[in-house]
Length: 76
Image (cartoon, rainbow, N blue to C red; front, side):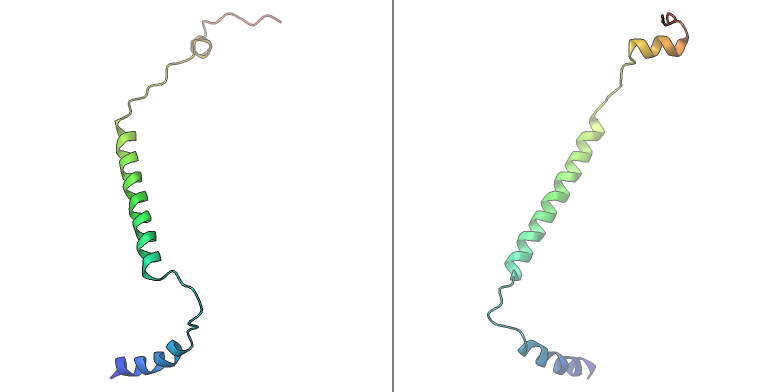
């Protein structure tokens, strides 16, 4: 009973829709959803590839000597 009552309230709202107005419709939604799925798949692939990267930064020669205290003193 409540479903039919809700539909009777929505019917006047449907008549207020302007037929001259352009809306994206179903095709716009399908294109947007396809783009969203494509971005999600690309992000998933990028995370998988970034996980495979084995990057170890080599210490700089100046910073390593300064850290160990074996560097030459600075001349003024």
